[in-house]
Length: 351
Image 1 (cartoon, helix red, strand yellow):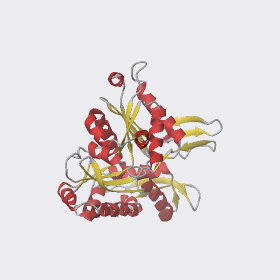
Image 2 (cartoon, rainbow, N blue to C red):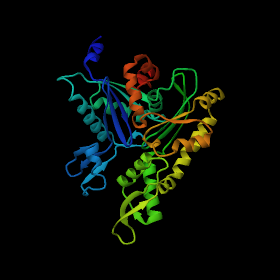
Image 3 (cartoon, rainbow, N blue to C red):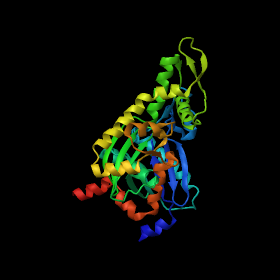
Image 4 (cartoon, one colour):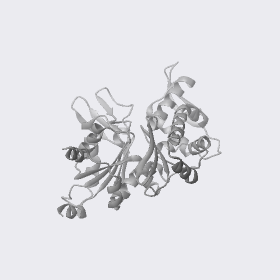
């Protein structure tokens, strides 16, 4: 009863805690935070200097005593303390806009499909330590499917491919559960590294992470059929001097071709282990792409050609997961259906 009273005044949150970006959705307001999952730390004083976009600006530009830390690797927490402080920063940022002494929020947060019990507990503990009253864990692919408005509660096949910063998750969903899935550590960050390696090999040019990420994003925003050249800047490995080149978008596509093939092969492998009734549904309805890594040019066409199935990109792929988590804040029945049991409740059941 008291919890229901608190719920009327708390700003319940949905959090997509991603390898590249953290997004926060506030009930009745939508997405209010979309910042890089990066923290800058002064190693001399152990002081956090910047979080999110401010820390992103420091990447590749810091003196030795300032370390820019990415506390999430492949969608899971690698540095608990830094993740906790980052979450606290984002939650406080939202809570500041609430009235004085607002109760702590309930938080719905996305987790990867292949998360271990230890990793799951780390997520729960980090969110609770950051200021949450209650934590609900939901698989990212389920949240993405809800955000894409797929009929996941129906007894029919729904296939979603969520390409994030550190992880690509492929899932077939029916009756609010995952029937067949694959998870691979090939995603947006790999595309960035592919571009860095390609520039070094083909042009003797050393480029940084921010430049490679910008090129990847530019590729996704190019007008189809329009001849365009992209600027790439870095250090010439022969002369050691700064250098700028104009390259074709085809060079970027060639750079990430191997990673694309791996994702496509895993989509096909997931379809191979899917029950035939659900495969028939997917053939009729198609495959849906979500996540920031799905944005680059013609990815949907490449998958469609390889799988001989309709492929569609969901609206605003980058916010699809957090919007799905946010929709669960509004639907208590569906939230109870898709919530993964917390580590504490599993411990109590085991007693």
